[in-house]
Image (tube, rainbow, N blue to C red; front, top):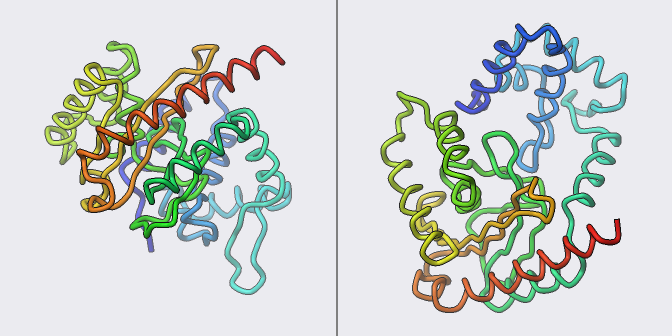
Length: 276
């Protein structure tokens, strides 16, 4: 049974702290926290698993799940009694993807880049302490990690997260890192050193490289960019096994191609803003 991650424990603690705010509806926050337990890797969960992941008592979890079932946001698998996401959540998810989406030109460029380098090319945005994939294209090569749209990767370990941190204003970045890597975090010094190196690389080259930190056999390059409104950071990355994408190739060939896709994505978002 999966135990709650440090991020999930922190999320539960944040809810308890926010409960002191008279405008904050704790029950609603707990229900949303339950829904966030479901992702591309956890499509079915039992109430015991959800209780472990959220840190909530199991009777509380079941009452909240019962309400979510009645509202259609969760459905129960009759064969094993586990819970799955319901259709209303899918509608919300598709709505979010449309909001975060790009036109076919961008998707074709991502796919061609993935094909040319036998890699995976993905777009992601921040979701609490993680980056969630919103677009993904795969080449023909063998991938070591099976990620999909909706998969979440930790900010502090992934090229997505490092790209996100690199483009943030210094003051805001410091606040985010303080939240993600509090005093006493077992990998605080190691991760802070690697993140600082990635930020320095971004300031010098316009991209960051993550080699063996998210996964010991994977190399990835990432480029972050703001949407035209300046409210949303997107991060585009290209990754593959290290023997397929050695760092020299990432720097000389992949990063320039990735920048071209970023420019297409920015044009796509500007066009969407104008049409709106």
